[in-house]
Length: 141
Image 1 (tube, rainbow, N blue to C red):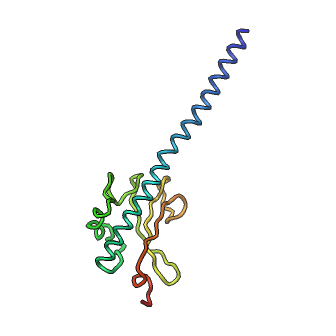
Image 2 (cartoon, one colour):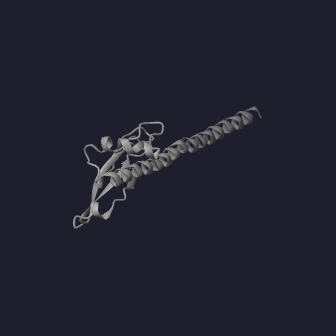
Image 3 (cartoon, rainbow, N blue to C red):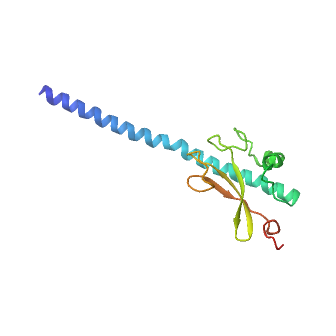
């Protein structure tokens, strides 16, 4: 009888550990999901700042100095929230690139995402294509 009690208690301990592990894994994913949502929203605010820049100067940001060029417009969009505006929720720098789509160059903002690996806007990277007026993307305009 005593051995049965010990086995029963041992089984309860094992089941408790397994359940606790599953619960912790579930809740440890939640902060990353919130970071993903925050980063996506943040990229949208940075995209809005790019729109303000384009409205003002009628030209694309330069790839080498885009952060400096965009700085005056960032505050107007609410993108200066918490961490430095040019970083994602994981503390990694936001990337700004021009991707070739046919004969047009379309700007894209992206974050490296949860794994913090640059996958050029693919994989778990969080990407936002920046809307541009046709005259800035179409070489025939």
